[in-house]
Amino acid sequence: MIPITIGISSGLLIILVFSILKQLNKMIIYGLILSGIGFLYVGFVWTDLQTLVVNTIQAVLFLFLAYYGIRKGVHILALGYFLHGCWDVAYNFFSDPGLIPPSYDMFCSSLDFTVGAYILVFNNQFKVNSIDQ
Image (cartoon, rainbow, N blue to C red; front, side, top):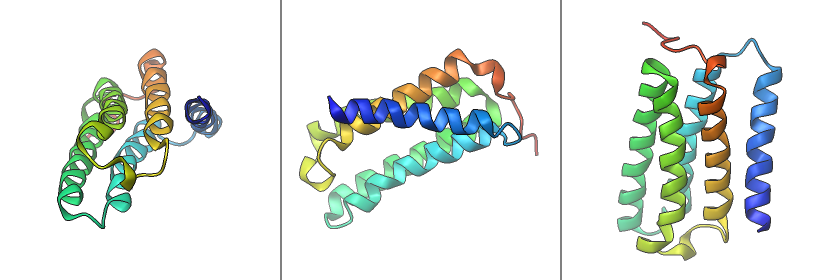
């Protein structure tokens, strides 16, 4: 229960900090966070080649979801957070859970679901198609 509480609290803290910093583009900020969280797993599992390959693929997938979320809309960005939360929960079913920190799955999934819910509920604060280059 403690990892979930810390994950939700961390998600709320992230939301609060970037709500205060209004001059920052939220689409880019949350896209950068989404792209980074996928690569955390790569850092955890670098000692096992097969798991490293799987986690590198998932990291690149979330990088692309973040990119398309920033370019095409807030719903793709929210989908990325929810999918990453599902990845966190499902991770232990097909990979060695000893490669990631204890309770990391519950911490990270609760953070992801908190941020994803925020993005969906308060999507009017995000600029859709904010990067048109």
